[in-house]
Length: 420
Ligand SMILES: [Zn+2]
Image (tube, rainbow, N blue to C red; front, top):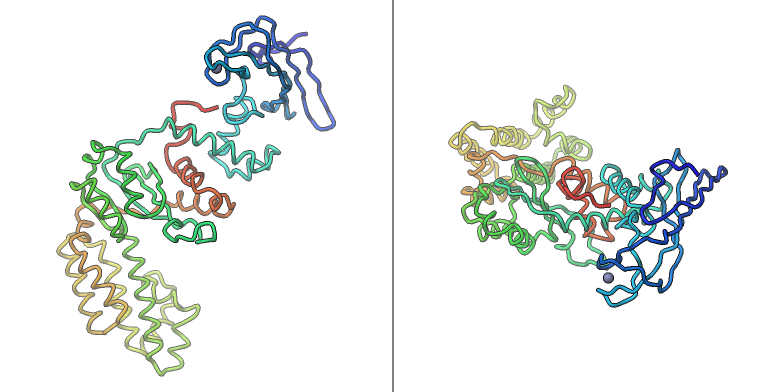
């Protein structure tokens, strides 16, 4: 029989190839060579040429040939292994490390596919069930993690991600978060830890190592005291910078609360009606981004109620804060905004301003380093897609690895060891 080169199998002879046109399937049948010397599938030592202690049949799926699903059929033997001192199955040289039902080539290909497309989509495409592929993807990432080493990074960003609702299985709200550590310069995720507690970040710094910690210059965090405490303990030389987007988000929340308070206070029905519901976002919008009709709308409300005029001034001024060229100018904006807030007696904004005032020593670092953090769009998309497919709820470990795979270095583009 004439066989192409890709039909050569180490230790085996091809004895039959059957083609089933009805379901586009090829079955290849192998027989173990008489003089083959196999290795122990556990310890790798030679099994010699002793008599087999038993065997069983295997059907392994290989890469499709011309669009035909292809299966390899063989018998796998057990021999006595001197090293293990036990009967062991022989290693099948072309069997995937990730699944006993796939060849290494096909395992590699499926694994690579799962790096760039959603597992559910890959499953549909190759005609396998989602769970099988999910397990392959998971095993592959676990194996890659054992070869993974953290890159040396000088500028870090630490972000918390809310990944699931508290449930019967996981009543603690803290455990619904993951902490994502990103390299600010490359925007790559380098590590993901459980929870958003100090212990979670501590764990990262311990793995990162004392030497690497000493090299860290800047750590961007949100206004979460637990993160700050951890950074101060492990990287006391590093400057802590608050996440700009987080501060703006808190500011917008306070503006929104203030809007509600003004509505409560007013007797004017038109104002009540024109400042709530679908109009609520208009009050957060930057003036220059509003459409003409939105501008008219806001102007009417401001005209009827002067509190809204004050709120508009405060918001517009604060928006310029992070863009100020110097710390002095930023401080001037911050104090000015503060004066207006306190004169207007807007309670939610007063609380917000007080909190930032207390943290001024940290807040001002922004004007030295000007790091912009917040999770990248890519990370947020991964999180959303994993949540949508329900896998994240079941297994947070998978979730963590998946973020590192798609947004970091835990993939075949960066890992030198091809996992098959
Ligand atoms: Zn062995």
